[in-house]
Image (cartoon, rainbow, N blue to C red; front, side):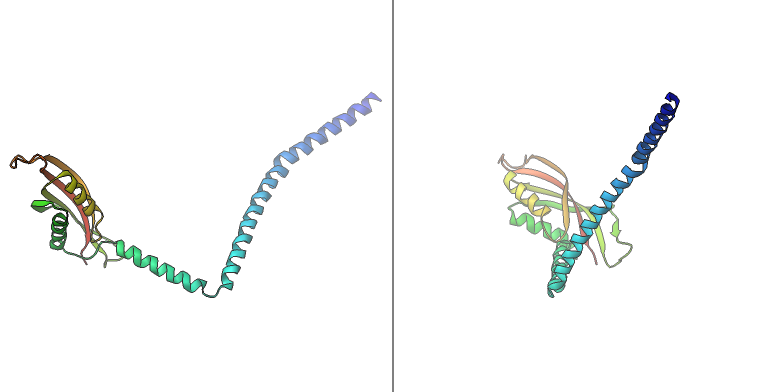
Length: 188
């Protein structure tokens, strides 16, 4: 009789172990997969409902196209304008004049190559480093640097700055500043 119970217990324990292994390796992983698929279906259902609601509005897509065109024009206006190096130097001189900064010298630094977009050869940008020597006060220097970095004709950044007192003038508020400006501008 004990032998019958022992065989039954072994069979039950074996069945329990097989059931537990089945749950552990088949049921629970599939349950996680079903939950992730359910979440994906819910997101798709929500997206489809939004699309159907948008499709009811006849002007939505024409308004969307208009907004995309406005955005494209705005981004295009932020790109550097087409100017020559002489125009770039003139622009720097005007920025200096507008910010009460005296330009002592301005010259492009040689040795930079063109940067061209290989897919669209209409867009060609030239990189030029420009060294500019200024005489100004700290306040006017700050306004000039801000004007240089936020102008809309080119993409310019201050690459290097060297500030010293101007020994030729007795006024200690007048500084001699040597700026190296890195600029990219559209050539055509």
